[in-house]
Image (cartoon, rainbow, N blue to C red):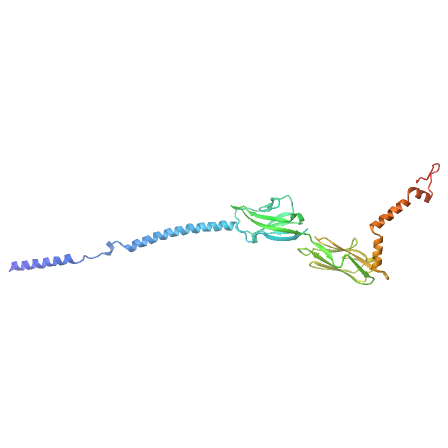
Length: 320
């Protein structure tokens, strides 16, 4: 009986062992390779590489932009400026981020160096440089502009490579014109009104002086002369003209070629034709003929005989 019991127990034990062999072993996740961890490591590495690449690219782009900023101009290239003779011309060169570079002005006609930085380099004292810090504007000032200053000027920044901005200066010779010239006829007691207009001027004149012959009449003490100037127009007014008001009148604005007009105040019964006839009689050619004829008549001998000036004891007539 005990033997059978032992066999039964052994059978049960063997059965339980076989059952355990066919059952799957327990899984411990911490002991298995973690694919998610490997993926995270790869992702971090990729991010680091991409970050480094982006940083390098950004740095390169920033460097390029910085270099570009150092050599850039805010204003347009090939600008043109008109200035009249005698005024001050101002050429602009607006830059930013110049850094350690130097800004210079060069006259392209003869490649003459005018300014270097904030210093004038030319022996011509009319050329000056002014730096307006608030506007980053390196200005070239040309005082008392002359016709020979006409041409192209270069603003150059000494970057690598250097960059330039070009400006063209057009110098104009302003002139005045008196409307109704060159002659005007008036009657005694009428009113004189002369209008002087400026041509090719780039700015209003500082002053306009009016002359009667050689005398300035803007502030005439004995006659009521009115001068009104506005922009490029000046008007001279004189009431109740007299014969003494005849003559040459000149309009002379600042930095401008003057204009002239001849005024004829006719007396009672006079006509413009009579004035013209008198003017033709005193032409230079007529005066030359009269002078030649007179010189032939008034010889020293003729004068001597005329005034009976003799030297005693000498033959002939001698002038003492």
